[in-house]
Amino acid sequence: MLRLLKIDLTKLANYRAFNVLIGLYAVLIVSIPISVIEFLKWLKVKGAEFEGFDPMKIPVLHFTDIWQNTTYVYTFLRFFLAIVIILSVSNEFSYKTIRQNIIDGLSRVDFIKSKLATILLLSFGSAALVFFTCLITGLIYTPNLDYGDIFVGSEFVFAYFLDLFAFLIFTFFLTVLFKRSALTVFMLLLYRPIELTIIGLLPDNWDFIGDYFPMQALTRLIEIPFPRYWFQEIQDYIAFDAVAVVLVYIVLFVAAIHYKLKNSDL
Amino acid sequence: METVLSIKNLTKRYGRLTAVNNLSLEVQKGNVFGILGPNGSGKTTTLGILLDVIRRTSGEFYWFGQEPTKEMRKRIGAILETPIFYPYLSATKNLEIVAQIKGVSKDNIDPALKKVELFDRKDDNFKTYSLGMKQRLSIASALICDPEVMILDEPTNGLDPQGIAEIRELIKSIAKDGKTIILASHLLDEVQKVCSHFCVLKKGTLLYSGLVDDIDKGIINVEVGAASGNLEEVLKAYPNAAKITEENGKFVVELKEGGAAELNKYLFENSIEASHLLTLKKSLEKQFLELLAESDNAA
Image 1 (cartoon, rainbow over the protein chains, first blue to last red):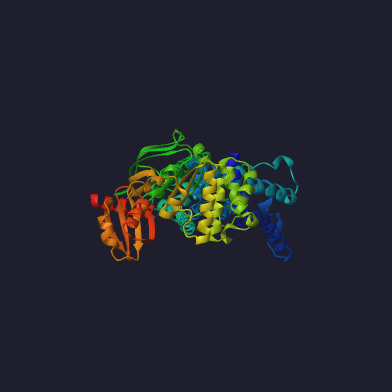
Image 2 (image 1 turned 120 degrees about the horizontal axis):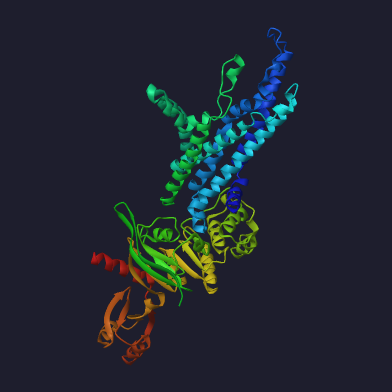
């Protein structure tokens, strides 16, 4: 597996689009909390009157809220990594290098494994970056830090990892299906609105099915946390059934990729 | 003799089209085996099946007497159609990927690049290469694992005469190392110059399989020219002549037996001094066209 990962990384390491996208993604991860803090500071300096309320006291980036808040926002950045995967896989088809890889002695399963290894590495690396960004941001900005609270809610980093991993595998599947990068990006953007429309059209007594659609299950991993600041109730835990559904989808997508590649002429 | 490749009743259908039809072949160790056929005769499809990039409809094939696996492919150096590499990577990086896939040392990269004379350009991106350089790089990539078998599909396609000559020399020098080479081509001259064995495919069906050296055997044709006016009459009187045809003022005599020497002696005895006397080698081209024509007549 490590050998297969190395092969795929050799392909990507000197690929400019890959480096640019990964770099941009990392910069965004690190800079979002900084910009939010700077924005709050700016509000304060501007002397914005919130009826005597200090904007720096909104606990968006304080332990324990920070974990769910940031990971929720970060899930929107997954498109950057999705494009990395789309390019990495569609290039293999457009340059026909998948064909040459197999001629040279890779099996079709090896090829899938090497791409999955990269997806796993990207998801894991990204989750690690998110974890440390949150940890450091929280340590800096939380007033009256209680060390017992630091890791409360950090399970959302795991949810973020799972979300990214499943989303990238879904992207991998779409790319194997459509082969061309532009078409795949288009389909990926189109998919979620289609899913939402179908969910919206479900009759009331069939409503629960909506939760089992792939992208819906992903969004249920990290629910939107911000309504809590206007005193609404939110889901501040990871729903177990959402995790189960996502895991099932990961298996299904990998099986579909395998089926598609196993039976096709390259 | 060790059998490197044996194909049994291999068939590939694309819907109603049969690209490879019940093909059976054997390639022995050390052969330089040419697969001939017009465009679209199923050469590349056959090689694609042998290398697992195309799914067969039915039939079997064995590499080194065993069921094909990815481990077999690691012992084969192969290029199908155009050279395929990552355009944004250098030659060295591209070959590193091949070396990793084949599980061979990266130390093999530089010698392979030297052999095809690309060492000076090894750090340039593949996309900056000329077609001839791309072809040579794919040969380097096929050489990297010191393969027991090389499969080359139209290796001189699109090259200039000098490039063609270079690739041809390269193939000959590889063959001299005792490697088995399978070469698909529609260039007959190429196959005749480098191959020991050949087969002819048409619409996926095997028309002929045999030795390149066997082509010359059998009927001998001698081309004769002389200043004397009664050459034709004298030739017609020659007992060993089976057929005489006139071509551009010279006569081509098909001999029942004997060779050019006997014919010359006969002419001299009849007081004709030949100014032109040439034993015609039957070219692969002629044989090939005859085979295709025969199959057309049969159909």
